[in-house]
Length: 218
Ligand code: SAM
Image (cartoon, rainbow, N blue to C red; front, side, top):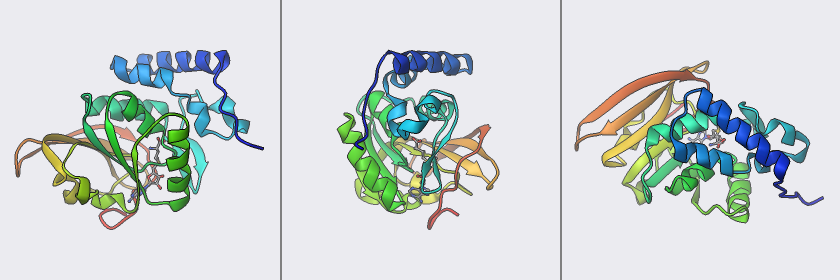
């Protein structure tokens, strides 16, 4: 049976409630909250699990991967301070929900996924539901040199360290947001490129991501 993209009052109501949950948890950026309130997150779930889509939880999406928790998506997006037209590299496309949030807040998105099945599925689904990004298959721990420099880079999987090669793909004034830690938990880290060889690092809250697997990763 073909998947049905239906978004009616029940889902829209659940989305409004999710926005209020995120607001209470400390998300303040109205553009980010608006994006969460607009994107039908249930489209990223099997229809059997639509009732899980507007809970503030991560959820399995197949291939041993997860759709990130809405709070985590909002938190990382808020940190990026996206300006309209910012060129953003997203590492770890997954199902593409975070990609849609980045697009809604005005980014031009280059997104890379290492798992072929997810890559194939997401690059078809996103344009189908109205979201256009540039999709790449490969090891994002090395970034995508060809399209650098980026205004912002977001990593949506847990890294053992900040890959230097990603910092070199930021423009001056550009910002990287990446969870760094061990297999159990990671701290959200931001790195601002303030000069050719100058970077400012800030360590923030604790999260739990699936691992970033690759040449400059686990
Ligand atoms: N962004 C997604 C969302 O909106 O829910 C969640 C992404 S999921 C938590 C992390 C993704 O990173 C997985 O799909 C995983 O396959 C991918 N990944 C892990 N290592 C990677 C790498 N080196 N390059 C690209 N993708 C990678």
